[in-house]
Structure formats: structure tokens, C-alpha cells
Image (tube, helix red, strand yellow):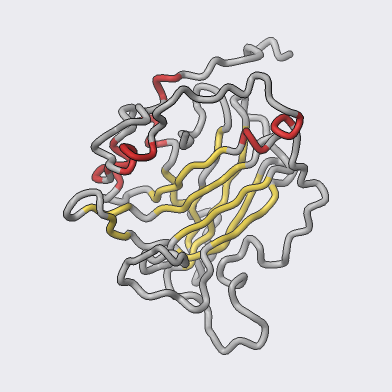
Length: 242
């Protein structure tokens, strides 16, 4: 055990918003009505796996500019601003979390998801699937190449729009410890206007979900880069959905 840090930092429950938040109207139907089920006495399947050491990823699993195109397809590259999304998965002490699965999904540059229930008027991009995955390296690093997603309207209020965002999943040591968050882009004026973001009363919690422009990793005449580090525990943890 390190003498510099305590072995365990208790989770700050005040960091999390109330699950029933009428301003965010979907929470009315999705918030729990009964006591949550404890996993203190979890079954072996809930305490272990999956293990990703032997997972074979495809060449373009983390490249959304390429992974929806089929061989011999006449479709071109996806439409939109090309970006690199990268960062590290670390614990509360800054130590890397290696060999963990990072998954992401997003709307296309027009704000349209490739999902049958997405009724937004924007068009689908025939060259863009909107999903990717990768395994963190020994230093906890991950990387995706994609397009910046567009904002889109949703029926929370008369004229409510979601900021541009990418959903991110980090798999813990068992299926019950999977964590999911959303990554926003710095400088987006829609962030403070979003009812989902507004349920977070601590401005520092919002900041943990905002990616920063990283010119050092940007590629000239190609794409900008955004860095999004994910802290899985401790006082500086990224805000995760519950």
C-alpha cells in the first residue's frame, strides 16, 4: 500500500444527481420505484469476467472512418469534421488501467444515429456506422478516429437540443462494474443548456465529461484531436451514468 495515498477513497454520493429529476423528463419513467438490488453477495458470474486478453479486434474497430465501409464499396469516406478522440483510463491515484475494453457510439455529423428508433430528419450517412471499440494499452491509453457528431433535437421541451457528444463505455473487472459516460466538446454553447447536463449541480462534475482540444495530437491538413481522460475512482473521478 502506498504511504502517499490512502488505500481507499469513499465515493462521494453528493457527486451524483437525484435519479428522479422531473426537469429531465425521461427520468420520470426511468428512475427506480423500488429499492436497488445489492450486489454485496454477488454470484461468481457477477464478480468475474469478461477477460479481454484474448479478444481479437478487427483492423478498423477503432477507426469509424473505415469500419462501416465494405470491401469494394463505392461509398466514399464519412461526411463531417474528421477528429481523433484519445486519452487514458486511470484510477484515483493516476495509475493506468490496462487491457480494459473501451467502447463508444455516436450520431453522425448531422446528428443522426444509425438506429431504427431515431426519428430525426437528418440523413443517414451510408459510410458511417457510429460504433467503435479498442483495448487500452499498458499505459491505459485508447484512441479512436471518427467524425465530430452533430447536435440533435429531442422532445424534452419545445426546442431542446443535445450538445454534440460521444457515449463511452469502460468495462471493469466484471460485468456488474461496467461504467458509461458521455464525452462533450469544450466550447460547445449547448452544454449548459442541456437538461441532462443541468441535473449535475457540481460544475466540476460537468468538467469531467468535457474533452479538450489537443493540438499536439492533431494531424495537419487531416484532423483535430480531442483528449478525454477517464478516471474510474476517487475524488477526481469522471462522472458516470447510474
